[in-house]
Image 1 (cartoon, one colour):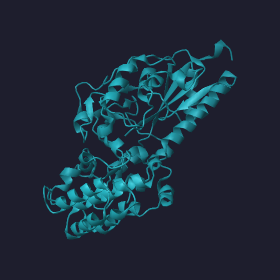
Image 2: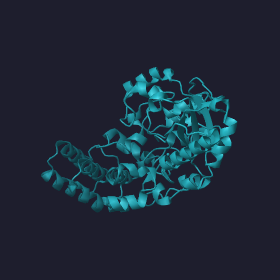
Image 3: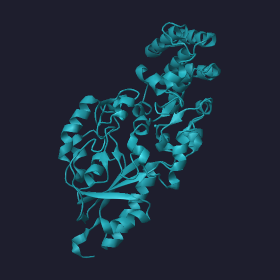
Image 4: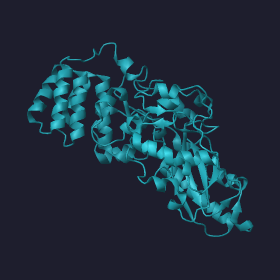
Length: 414
């Protein structure tokens, strides 16, 4: 190929569609100097620990690929009609949890990475030489949403998510760094809330009020992060979690612009009901091997069974169903501190004579100071000291009809 390895997006789009990438755009590989201020502010609000630590490296794509000349970005839609319907069909009267819709189907990391690699091979065939490239899906130093925004793939809303004109914010983002120049690549400035107008429903609906300003999230207060964090879940986030055991969709579900989206048509993201609404009893009885067998194809599996069991204990506490007490009690003797603490909290929420008796017995043998504090607080709660009455309040506390989200869904998504 001539023209000095310059390609246009019109040449690349058919290749992208052929490998299952319906939405692509491109930007150059120059540094994202405009991120210096936002990254410093984010650091001040509190990083989650999932991000690349070095801010300078996050701003320069050539740290990731020194030969990079351009970046192709992709928005892969995942909310199919079937998944949207599944979101509305919560089994309210069963002991089931709730997950974010982005984990209903296959793990997007593998799906999107494979498609971007396939696109790179097709571009290589087009230019007629071996090219240098690198795929970035969620785990690279790059700030995925800003890369996508600068490329013209979409715009960032007040909820901090990238909105595709066709698919709304229900998209996974990926990038393909290339040593090939794309002649019509964009270099657009940041413009958070470009199409939001005066609407701030996402910010007001957040269960933990995690938004500091439009597009500015206190990430450690986001329930999507809380369900993935290590250790004990902070007390102030336990009740807001409701039935959630992975992720949160509220800021997407309440957005009026997402009502106008086009549905994804991708078999990789067809919903698995058992992933969407996991059986909490079954989850708490699983070994790690059983967990991987049941949930290994989903993006929620990466944290392992113990994190999900901790979350399931919190969910059972929020459900306040006494039939769950015998199962929860088993975790008072777990070898994991966070599981013992979560079990104690759940029993305190449920209350009743059996819960109080088991908590008092656990207190006599517990050695960890933090867990002892949790047990003491749970005994007081189970005895009615400052405890809400279960009757008539569960729906209000858990967010209404589905017991999880204020509207009736992460990051992370993607």
